[in-house]
Length: 290
Image 1: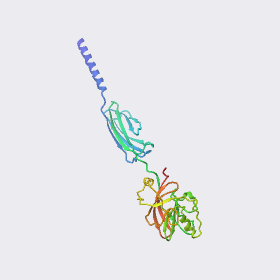
Image 2: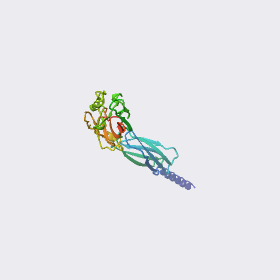
Image 3: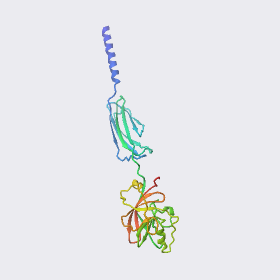
Image 4: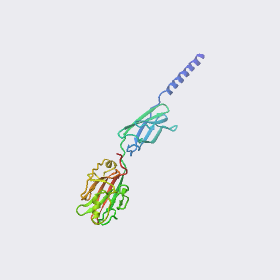
């Protein structure tokens, strides 16, 4: 009987040892999928959203996200008892990241039994598109006998003004003369003062903005802030003196750069009922630093 008790005790010790060894084994690796939500533009300061789905035969423990170039150092502790979880994570791209950098993000999921699995996602940081203002059908009207009609366009707010407005607000001017037809000129163009001067109307160009203006072949409808930022404006000049373009026709597209450095495009829509035309304009919200 004593030998039998010793044998049973030995068997129990072996069983306990075997159980302890099993409990130290790594747990089964979880399954992990990471899907990016549509809509990210990958520009500095913007966000990227991912849906992370994890499941295990054990119990989920933690989700961590680390990265190269951009390291969010993110961690999520799963609620106790979960074997499956789907979570939405929104990560911010730091404003200081340089366009062209490729960001690699590693999503690691662990379980309570030390099982783990990871997925890596990548994207390339792109340059932010500069902001712009877009204005449709801004009507400019020119009268040779007075300066009371709104023949000036302001790149500041996209509105039309007459000559009495604050000079810093005036960026493009409509002029109309039989020999040269409809024309868009700089507010300080000597020709504009001459035209009004024929009718004894005084217009002082000395305190007006100088805007560079030229024709171009840009696709106005497709243009965005990047298009405007890339414009190189070497101004044309008009007969009579000053920057501008004469003899405009419907559909002409002009590029311009204001005195404070904003670049823009203006598409011409002419009305022959009166000396007026309307402009569709795209212009930078702020001048690009030079």
